[in-house]
Image 1 (cartoon, rainbow, N blue to C red):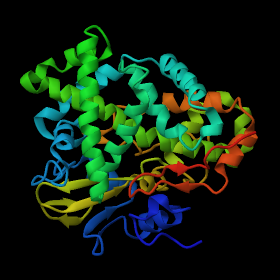
Image 2: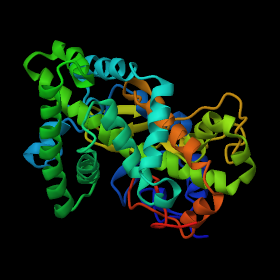
Image 3: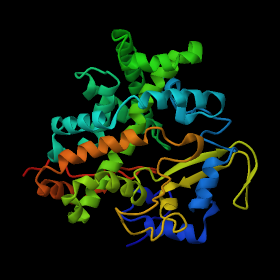
Length: 381
């Protein structure tokens, strides 16, 4: 099988991992002239970039992408994962505290129920994308009737933020941002004792900006679990189909999910931007440089995990960069895993033939950073 032409094409390649292994072994951190970016792939390089104080989540000169419309920009500028400095840590604490109020059993049961309502394996083409939005939407207190539209808007918003989004996607993302803001404003006004109100109390410390920051990060909870959950659920279905014996051991699902997150990560890469000159792993990086941080390559670095290309549910001391590292490590890791876990518990009660039929000719959603399987449309037993 041919290798991907470059690191940006790798996430949607049928098998990017031999390409990543070559980068880890030969070019752990290098300047790629064609993309005009540094590429970090080894565990050492990825860890160093993610934790270096000069490496920011946005360029200093462009904290909000210039291409975004005013509505999408208003959301983006408050997102905790897209901010550095004094605002980031308090808002991340508010988000983490809010997420900590949800328990494993609650999320798993809601995910099981949603999986049934959304059509189970017969709708595996759409289920991975609708599930996280439905579950998180209900956890946030959004109305049942409004969830289908929220799902559409969230997908449009996510695609509008993607690097290289064309004008059509940017315009759809702008409309989605306005729609989602109105949904959350209405939900907050209608239920002064509900989950959003609880979240709002955690954002009071931000003063006049607290309400807008709250609304933006409520949208962020939807958008940030969208691709991660869809990719984790889809990649785990493929792993279970590839190893039928695992399907007979549902008690292993948490360990299977952890190994999928390491072995076939739903989020393959992220970016960091140099705020000042720095020396990282012996390389001189200049202020303004961009680094493509290949999380999925670092996960399979033999320096991080022994025999890294083997899928091993019983792996000891498993280590993974899929949810990041340092101050910007994702606070939603447990939520994503619990949603996928509940959905799989329900899917595995169905006829395995339905899953096999949905996985025939599987492709991947076009993306430069996510690895999200796209299953066949409606299948029947």
